Length: 108
Image 1 (spheres, rainbow, N blue to C red):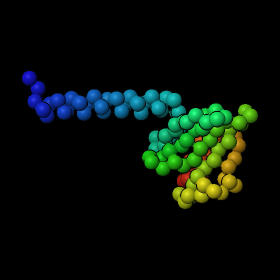
Image 2 (image 1 turned 180 degrees about the vertical axis):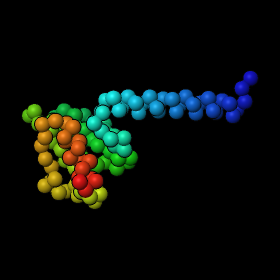
Image 3 (image 1 turned 120 degrees about the vertical axis):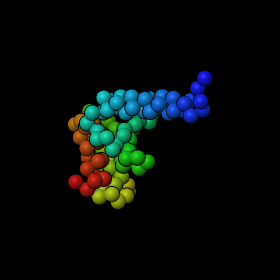
């Protein structure tokens, strides 16, 4: 018979295992995204709106429009500037759109 501590350790090991495999899966899905950033999407009336996150901070969004990717960073040099549409740019690939959002946030 297992003790309470053994049961808790077994449950913790199972959760750790699942989290590791989830991170590995995410890395395979988005190999061009650095480990400190995550991407998810939400349905939009025009298709999918993709969001770039750093922890709980939404760094920006991007979406596909007429064979181009529109990238909208919400930060520049780690300062929130969402209302500044001058940061929005279009790119030929989603990788470049993501890179633009991350670089804007990091101040590159």
